Image (cartoon, rainbow over all chains, first blue to last red; front, side, top):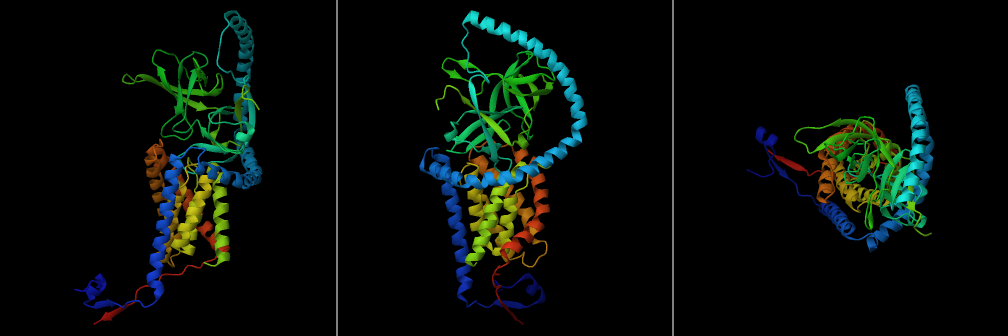
Length: 311
Length: 175
């Protein structure tokens, strides 16, 4: 039976024969198509390999940096065009929740007023005791940092990376591993820098972590992204004997061990505890945190540049 | 494709890539975000053929990776294959089908999501399968489907429809 026979023609008892094409395009088209896609796939794989292996200061890093600099004006321009629409959406959205939010805020203000008075006394006492002890500490927030304000000009697509790109770079004294915050709290860490842009790994990224402490009870742990969710954090590695309560505030712990110190300074607010649980088999408590920062709608951030870094 | 057609297609991809990075990626709906650039590349593949789809996907991915300071080539690889597959679909079984853009966008969104997950996993990035393949991909799938037809019409209005269909092989019936 002929190879060209189709199922239908076989059923009809007919035989079909393909007429060979005579046009040159018939043979050249598929070949050219396969060649082009093959070259592009190989080019992409070469780029991935080089980009993955090369250092930030390497030739490919330089090319990417130059490309990012060239495209920055377009990104900034588009961001500015989009900003009024984004603001309008936020305004409309906030109107829906304004009444409930106002009620919550009034309660919080009463609570905070009490705590401010207590904190003022504690601060005075703390400063006095530090002077007495000659206590050495790591850099403290915000006293030991200069904030560099930067606009958010982009974020990678998809669920694979939780990062943002900001419109400030090494020209603005920003370096890799500089902490990034907003007025609401800790945002993340600078992971790549070009002269005028920088990539910030958000605290919600799978690979991000920050040592943190419960402000009321002093229980320590590591804040990480909660698996399977988009914007929830967990306080991991909290020992079972430590006390953590729902509603407690979690702030960055900061630490210093000899010449080494935490990438995040002490005392940056991260979020509020929403649930605490533990099982007999787990070594640590399961503490879930609702972050203060809305990672999905970041418009501008502050990069904390150590004051010790010369201009 | 004519030089003017290429220029228009390149402009569309460039604007879509910037829109994706600057605006669309930050608009979270139901836990996921749309992939506008993927939808545009699929539309271009359907309208302009597999070769153009692959080239434009590669360039669009490159813009995204450069602007976001990500690993170069990752988005390019995914979008090259997406553009190529959409083009092949348009050149063969998808031709003259009214809902070809929806079918192509739906299938390619799922395939691209799975492929991107494997790629990131191979590169050693910590990615949770449930987040990547369910929590984020499901809403992205729905939003991309909603965008498929309007984006396809918009792209066709800008770049035109110059798809040269591959001539089907003629057959002779032997009684």
